[in-house]
Structure formats: C-alpha cells, structure tokens
Length: 283
Image (cartoon, rainbow, N blue to C red; front, side, top):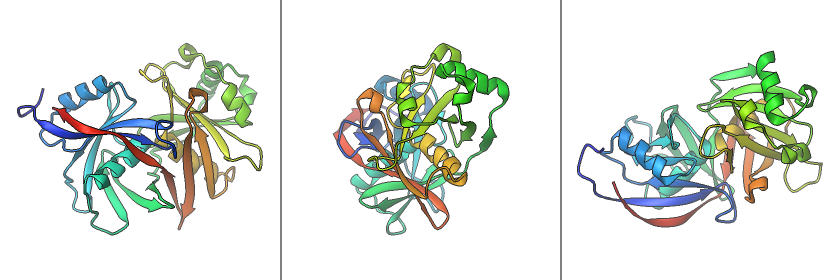
C-alpha cells in the first residue's frame, strides 16, 4: 500500500478543544508521512477509528510551514478544524519553527490556513465559506424531521460549507440543543450542526452539537470546521458578539470549549490541545 517499504514513523494522539485532557476530540497524527500513498493514508485513518487522522508533510507552497492531509475513516477532507489545531500543536512539539514568528501557515486541500497563539491556545483563521445561504424548503423540512422538531422551532438554517458540507441550524436555547434525540434515518446524508444560546451570565455563550449520519462517529465530540462556519454566520448576522465561547460534547460526557474572536475583521477559532499518546507507528 506504500510507495516504499514500511518504516518507523513518529506518531502522536492529541486531544483538541479541551482544557482537560481526554475530554475533547482526539486526533491521530503521523508526524513524518513522506512517501505514503493516498491509499495507505486512507487505510490507516480507517484503522485508527477516530473521527480524523492527519499526515504531516513538507510544504509545496513557498509560504507554508508544513502540509497536512486530513482523512476521516472513509474520505479525505480539504479542511477540518480540530485536525488543524491538533496538527499545528504536533508540528510545533516535534520541533517545527514557523517562517514568521508567532504565526504558522498550514497548507491543506483548502489552501493556506494561518494558525497563531492566542491566550495560551492555538487558533486558526476561519477559511471562507464556499457555500453559504438559506436551505431550500425541502431541506428545511428534512432537517426538522431529523431533529424531531416542528419547522418553526428552527429559527434559521443555512449552508456553512468550508470543506465539509455543513448545514447550520439555530435553535432558541442551549436546553433545546441538549435535548435533541435525532432521527438519523430521516436526516439522510446531511451533515448537521445545531447551536443555541445559553442564558446570559452562563459560563459559556452557546451550546453546539454536530451529527454526521452514515459515518462511524454519529455525533462528533467537538467540531472546529462547523464552529468556524457558525461563527461567520452568527457574528455576521448580529446573533453573536465578536468574542464568545461555545461548548460542545456535553451530551457525550466531553467538555469541549471553542473560543471565537474577531480581530481586524477576521474570525479566529481557538482551543486547547494536549498530547496524550506519543510513540511510533510502522507505515
């Protein structure tokens, strides 16, 4: 499956988007993936049985510090959020030094993504949405059925595509988000993220859940790509302030925290990362 004989390669497993290790979203990272075929990467990502596995490579773009390829168990993504932060964390831990102090430039299928330190966390610049706008009436009805809600409970529903084909659904409260018991069969092949506000004065501002029907991980613990799209949607429409914290993974027993901030007109999405497993893999 490889273009060369298997060899020992550095390997990390990182927990992303949680201040407390093992309460975020795990990511497998092969630190030196040079010479691996796409087939081998996909096979290994399927074997790890995590939501995503990444492979670090030398950059091909002159402005990039490193290149990453991002795989789920069944497909390659051009961009994803928690793999971006976890890969950046691992690249730095492995001794990577960015060309520009304080800012990493990641090369991926979606192009160049900047990553920087922010309040002790890494944060990525939200990539532009490649599809944005209200869903059609049939899709809205399908979303309501999939969430087991009347259509008027969906305050808004919009495409938020920045790699993964997300649809965002805004509900009236965090309590509604936490109470959802989805009908995944009715949801079909839609990738759906739901978000609702907490009461003023709560420890976090929004509650988020994301559902990926048909994937090995039906509900994702913490999802950077969806939160990046949701931030552009909510801040742009005035429904969220220019800085907020979202919780995700609560129903799964996780404590994901996504820190969103607008700086100089750009939206940055950040979270803590911690290396939980470090060793080698033969690939």
